[in-house]
Length: 275
Image 1 (cartoon, rainbow, N blue to C red):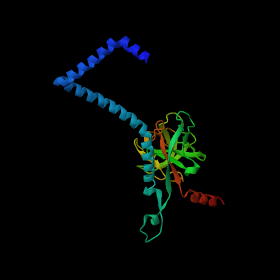
Image 2 (image 1 turned 90 degrees about the vertical axis):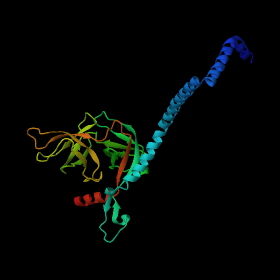
Image 3 (image 1 turned 45 degrees about the horizontal axis):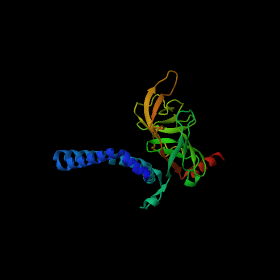
């Protein structure tokens, strides 16, 4: 208390000056129309800036929660796509559940670790066996094909992305319907190569590429990318085709694991062929 009194005695002239300044300011604003308008406009502007800043900060912290909510909604919508269902050959049935057998289902996931600058890149997801993920399942995003599940644990999984030199994806040129094998040989994480397309096929820059659905990994029609450059190399029978990938792996964060529900049945047929 003594310290406070000492402070007042030491700075009483400054404090009295500030109080008088404040009173003068209030009187000027209240009894002068021009100054009052200026004050109201200025305070509104400052208040607007402050409220906008607070709102922006609040929105930033809310963004992750909103993204997760949207991811769940998109997952539910993807699971309703008709292409993920296989038509049952049962006559005289009208119900969707009776006519169609679900072939694929999607599990939403978040990437918690990734690499894009290596020749053997990997992605780690925050879902695993407990969430229904199985080894060999495909992984896609809202922009297109991402890769294949390589390793799983109870709550995590590791993805072999298409920007890994060990990953190959069967895809089809949408305009001509010819298909080949997409491979990545290192370098830019935005480009890959399409192999096994013969010279007689009409291929142009800008042609879109989609998954064929031949394997039990991806549904038919998942976007892979677009033809970026086409070359005929002497002494070869196939084009050299550069592909711009639809997925930007540098900014990729949320994905969907593609669970092929009939995969075991398909694989068992292949085993019988080898018996």
